[in-house]
Image (cartoon, rainbow, N blue to C red; front, side, top):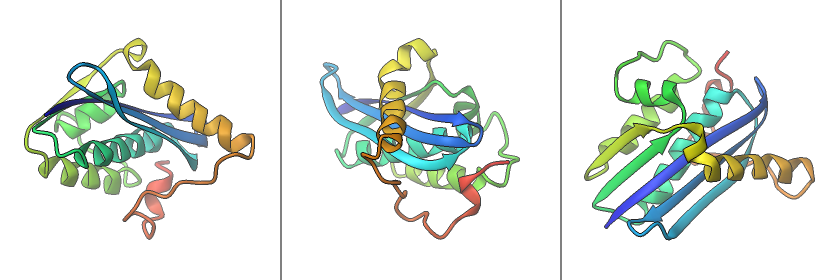
Length: 155
């Protein structure tokens, strides 16, 4: 089974209130999984990585034969493809986790998409921030990353 995923992180301020959003679709563009979580005060780059990690983990639970991963963060795509080095120590653990997850995928394609093609993931990320600010959501913690406090801010 081939799945398509879109992920996006949002931060209101840099750092500021942050949310992650993601959507996993089947080949016929039916929604299989959505992600919408508030992740605390983070920078935009950290929230982008967190959105990618959580959405990828959820997509992998479906045991797809091929993953088509789409992000609107050119920085993330270039770092994950090895075009850019990860110089910021705050992003290094997130990069490492992302690469570990990708190494477990059967087949995947990673691509940068324009923001307008990633509206649903962006909406889900912002919905999470709104939910927290309205008192409806708590802070989501990414499994396995709790002890690493340095990744929370990349400045």
